[in-house]
Length: 434
Image (cartoon, rainbow, N blue to C red):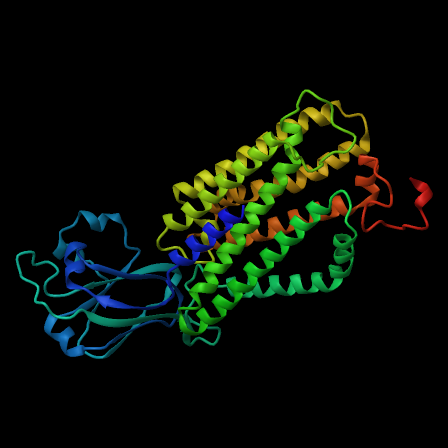
């Protein structure tokens, strides 16, 4: 497991790129010729006072090359079938780069609309012309939406607007919950008990999810000011979230594997004990490795994805990852159905059903939200999936906490001593009740 985590750290941190809305780079004539226009960036404008600012380090070289920046609204695949000249001629705005700084106002958008910027010069459509060995043209492009006061100072694209506030509220909720429950959780972890490993994994996963939210908040706070943010923080947020996914999957598979490997037997008097057999451990580790590989593949598959939006990716890796979660949920459902259908104890049935709710919510929230997102507008889908997955998985953790920390249910089902479970309720007054 430690080797897998080290691999995740290296892959995520080394593969990160800053794709903020302050874009710096080089205008390259050769690339512009090969691609019929060098792609620079994409931005979704909304409302009034949208602005694009382009700054050059060498305006004389730009004039010599007849450099220009082309803006396309809702650029689609139809342009790929056009000739180079026709493709460049379809631009909604053409900005001649003959000064050190150019400001282009975007007309009012009745609804959020994606705009793309391409670079072209005098050599782009002249395949026979020899490109002089000039130095490439350095540039900085800034893209702005209007803020609440109507000034073009907001670096967030329309599909990103609101995420910064969401992470702030999420961190506030974590802080309040931590202040309320930190002492009883600490006592539970210190005391130990039959589900001590489960408590540790749940607490670690919740802490890592909080770290991910904090990193995303820091990244977006800087992003709102300079359009770049702190890419390392975005990468760390992804990494902590991936570790959360891996650790929770390992815990749930370890708890459930006693059922899946012994369907013919009746449920034991102590359900959901951490299964230590080689077969169950191999299955749990195999599921963890599979999910880890798919998560890493998902990061590489979308070159234009932002650090905080990987939940909404529609790549093959993302589809396979959701299929894996659906398959695990179906496997758990089939086993639970066999157990519950033969179980006579009402308490045990309630226990299994509560556990199933937490597991199904964890496994199915992403696929279900992904399917539901199609009914929303394009600029809302990413936020619906990202926010929805985080909230649903947090609720799933709360359900599992309540299940295993509740003496009134788990104590009865597993027939454990009242002294062995932490956080017993009414420990002195109602001890005779059990």
